[in-house]
Length: 422
Image 1 (cartoon, rainbow, N blue to C red):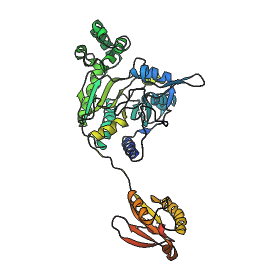
Image 2 (cartoon, rainbow, N blue to C red):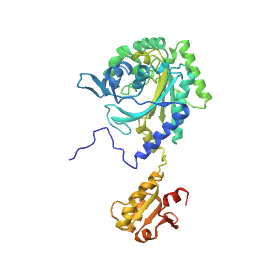
Image 3 (spheres, rainbow, N blue to C red):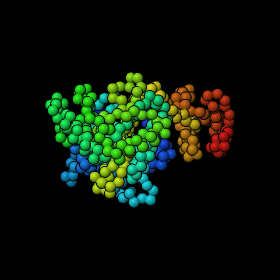
Image 4 (cartoon, rainbow, N blue to C red):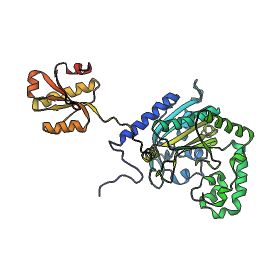
């Protein structure tokens, strides 16, 4: 058996990669409209970055990171998510000193988590995410959410459900933490080992447990909304009011805590409600992370963002039967007959490409009929036919492959004629 692709990864082949290109173009276009600028960070970072930002108590840090020691003895980790690296770059490059604030950034790139591969989930996966750093205005929360929803709508998804929550500020979460410990402590032995550990490290994470989500204590657990102080409650109300004003429907879920420790105040998820999409319905998740910039060594600056998986997006598109437009045609296919015509076709092909046309020729020594079939398979608009007679006459035969209409063009200035629309 030959060498095979690593488990949890995939080859994206021609015919499929065009869908990815269309999604990436859509993401870049909407970010341009919202004035988010692209940032590219390293694929690996110091392990400490994710331990401090994502959180030691999270499944990502405890179980899923690809961590290695380099030749210099440094512990490095393939990035499992995008926010930590962007925030690190924001602090390290002193973007907080830029004239235009908040700093609005987006990224598209591979992330790595050692998870059990399943439909729509891979160990190497691609995330599109945005970060808005420097503002604590509820309007930027609404903007971030609206961008995510607009992105999905632009791609044709309709069966979407937006779920939001507030995790409050530090004092609100501290009050909830005490209530959660009191609630779960007497029966914590009935929960999984992870939850037993979380009770000591981060009780809010118990609410995010997939194994014990059906436990009766989950249904009666204290709600963060009952422990929001006045400032946090007012903030959340403003976010909801702004979303309503933008015509964005949402559902409030007090058990939505997200899987990363750096979240506070606004948290949200966008889910697919398409029939047959699968048990795991989350497409996108995000929220506010005030304090994270300071945690990685920068000044105390607020921030909010989201990340979504392109793989999950493709699955949702399939579930809703949405076909993405793909550019499959070329302008010209040169059909050369005979050795002299073959030699002439090579520089002509280059001239066409330099003139801005998409063009191709046969490289397999096929006969006339087979070359026409090759042109049809490539969805060529025109065939440029050159044989011995055409070379003697200094002309080429131009055939419109859809209508069958044919015309002659001078070889000497053919490219100029084609550019003028002949």
